[in-house]
Image (cartoon, rainbow, N blue to C red; front, side):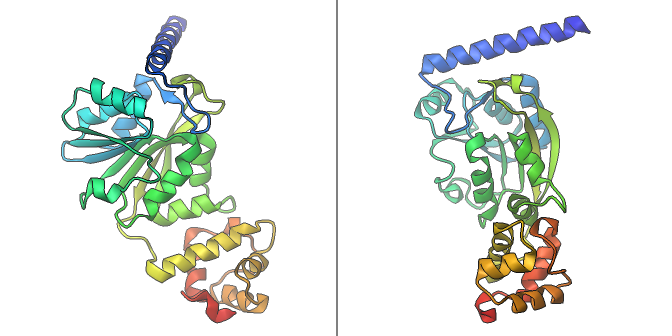
Length: 292
């Protein structure tokens, strides 16, 4: 057993060194601001790709392909891969090095690119090792699109993954937002040695199966998130006080609507499940100004 572990450590060290050399050749310095940590562990790559349950007819969007280690595996399993890379040096390297006719390299910022124009009306999945610094923003953007992915298999900081799958009484704004749109599940953890450079924290691979339709749409959905943001804006306060302050509404009116929704006004935001927030929204209605 000791020999097997030693051999693997040697292989990991060699892969790490190769990745460092390749990045240096390309003039790419991993950006702390972007949270860039390049995955080099082939075993982790294979597990991520398998978790997506890809087939030859599937369209996959990858955010931040880096040196393309996951891109190559996705191209082997899926029908088409759209890889979005913001770094021009890496985008150029991927175009030159990837020997796959079913991969499109898009040099763009994932937070700005017109994804609808790229995927059209086709169903698609997102599979990615998301840069730490933009993971939550990318996730929010993808889930709030009208044409959402059917599934996401993403690697994020372990702490972020744990926040996303949390249940009452440990909910957060991020947990409510993700669970409103889909069912998240942590598949496995990933140690720091799988990356170049080594991050200071562990990562986790998260699978989110997106609901065909969100439980609320249009003005009701907008009111839902207005309520949730107000509730979490002052987490130490009782829910009635936080909503009254955040929405600039009379406290008595807020308490009445909470009671009508079956929610104790003395509870705090982190104790409410998504379904309870939906009950709250239905009690308040789409036009929150009616209570002012």
